[in-house]
Image (cartoon, rainbow, N blue to C red; front, side, top):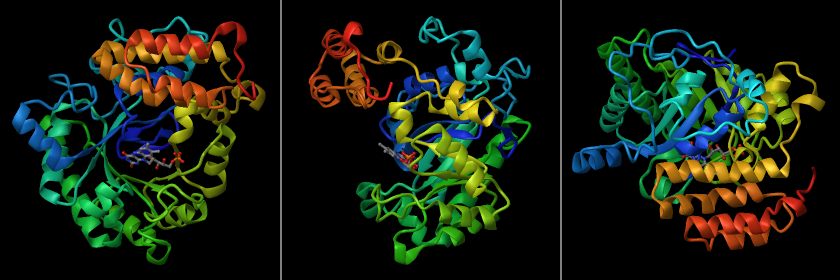
Length: 398
Ligand SMILES: Cc1cc2nc3c(=O)[nH]c(=O)nc-3n(C[C@H](O)[C@H](O)[C@H](O)COP(=O)(O)O)c2cc1C
């Protein structure tokens, strides 16, 4: 099974960080299905976050509900409970015991840290281009939050991050600089972990693309550099910065990285179905597969992929929840957001998620147009009722 530093993941299928989507409510939805080996936070700018904390004296809200570290917690491993006992319960098995999860709700009554309870570690992604603030921020995160890995962003292609800030995948042009930043964070993690008396340092991972452009591929040099400074695993999205999200992910190049590293390599890009995820593991020899956009439409993809990986037959593993379940899930997701945010903010967040749940549905476009106009919880629920009326539900392909 995939091991990242001292962390043993229960599944080789990992949630991709996605800015604007990777919040606590979304992670709870993914956890609900099981089959996901690692959950991801929003990416956070080191200097910006430190500055925000200096001004407001707290980071907690900005951290999208990352759980706080409990006093006296010595485990560096997300599979341990706060009382030190080992959590061996497989979230998939728990899902099976709970049937279709229809009766399971999250929120006020749920354990404060359901991720730890389920043994699914949390990764926090940070970005910047200066070693000192990255190290300081990583140290702070490890000391104060119940997180299990720090991920470094060398993959973001957004203009604000690349052109303006010279961060994210801009840095792939400068492998030495990448090494300097990663080394600073690896050392910071060692310091913070030691100070906390953790049984092992919190692993530092990195997420990268193939290079800045097709003419400037640096994937092998960057990956080797990351390994040499003590990074515990590398995720490779098989595109260049210039490609943004166009074209297709080049998994042959991801396999080239796997061939030159000893640390785990996680492949990422364009996985649309659970069989594809399993196939990527087998064909390209990667240690894990990270899934992003498809999980927004089908949050059960990790569960399906893990079921296939565990040898369950396709006919059983690929069972898709029905449309009524999808509607209930959407409303449940909204309820979790309502418990964690002000109503207006919860609606704003749901205006992004709801169209994803609607993909493949007849009238999906109209649903999107309708839902992005909602302002209140009642308006949002009315839009859902309008487009997901149980008696006339029809979702393509079911
Ligand atoms: C809306 C959106 C936000 C993203 N935000 C991040 C991010 O914050 N950090 C990161 O490393 N990658 C980010 N990505 C890239 C994804 O993690 C992933 O590498 C990419 O979507 C390819 O995987 P997929 O084809 O499975 O979606 C983002 C992608 C999308 C679509």
